[in-house]
Amino acid sequence: KAGVTQTPRYLIKTRGQQVTLSCSPISGHRSVSWYQQTPGQGLQFLFEYFSETQRNKGNFPGRFSGRQFSNSRSEMNVSTLELGDSALYLCASSLQVLNEQFFGPGTRLTVL
Amino acid sequence: GIQVEQSPPDLILQEGANSTLRCNFSDSVNNLQWFHQNPWGQLINLFYIPSGTKQNGRLSATTVATERYSLLYISSSQTTDSGVYFCAEYSGGGADGLTFGKGTHLIIQP
Image 1 (tube, rainbow over the protein chains, first blue to last red):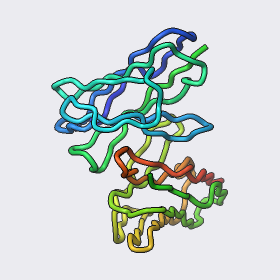
Image 2 (cartoon, rainbow over the protein chains, first blue to last red; image 1 turned 90 degrees about the horizontal axis):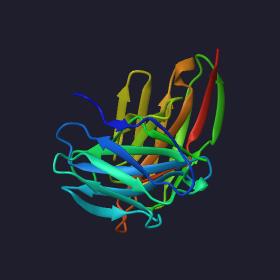
Image 3 (spheres, one colour; image 1 turned 90 degrees about the vertical axis):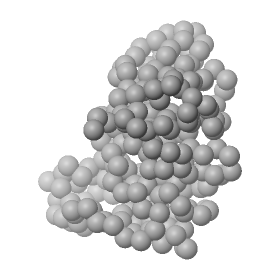
């Protein structure tokens, strides 16, 4: 069974731009969560989607948004990029909510 | 939400040595996971261990849910064991993502 996939793997943007990251969960998994990892703040929860609905959201500004499609694939969007948004963005999927999570390889975003 | 404390923050060992990594939690443990982050950033699942003991090759983990801690044991360390080890638990309180510890950075020297 294929693992969680994320595209693109690397991305370079400039301040003020917006970016969309994509995540395809493990087949059959209905919950998708997003995390941001930075050297200063560590791994932080962004949001979780289940059956196309956002169930939970971490403590991030409204510039961070996401959605989930009927096939469970998910996208996250960051608008008006800031230098501090440079990070590794990790997507995880699980069968149901509050289950074991499996992570993708991540998208490394650099904002210049 | 839950607080997760990992120790030690850094560990340098010679190949062949054994090690014990610890996670303490401020609240109930129900969905505890251990991960190894490889040099490319991917989090590799090691154990899903809300309670009890599990073993997988040279790695084993024990969670004592009543005392809110978990231990990861690595025996006969290899250089490929190097990296950062994280434990995580669901936050609770409405923000049900995983809360991670700051990690243990393990370096295995040949």
